[in-house]
Image 1 (cartoon, rainbow, N blue to C red):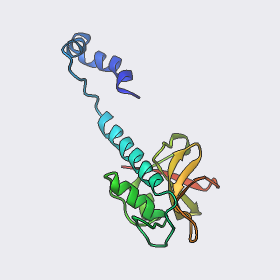
Image 2 (cartoon, helix red, strand yellow; image 1 turned 45 degrees about the vertical axis):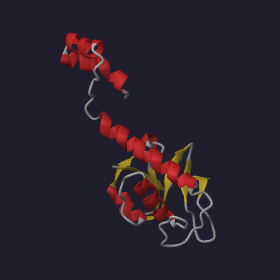
Image 3 (tube, rainbow, N blue to C red; image 1 turned 90 degrees about the vertical axis):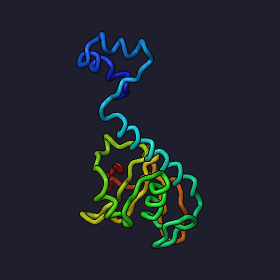
Length: 157
């Protein structure tokens, strides 16, 4: 919900006269909860851009950049450059995110690939069913369509 959509409910809570006074003097209306949500979105968008900028970087198991990456190394590096700290492995990263459904996923969310209860891969959701990730030995960082339904989504807090 945008700040503009919240104005009617704010006016009801604060009183129409108060909201109109704020608007008339050019003040801003503070919307509780909007800043952290917007900040999280901007971190995620920035992390996605950083991952995309690493297109073509070689995969190397255990690498965390800036020139070589494994899957969780790419997400760790991208979010660190965007101002958010993540743990090292895909499973640890899953445990540190706010879990979201596929229906509620957003660009910049982490996509975790699993087999049963074991998380084995992670990438950053780029929209339209695609992720930026460091796939495997012999491959490079690239944009790829999600190839399985065995995925979980997590939003970096």
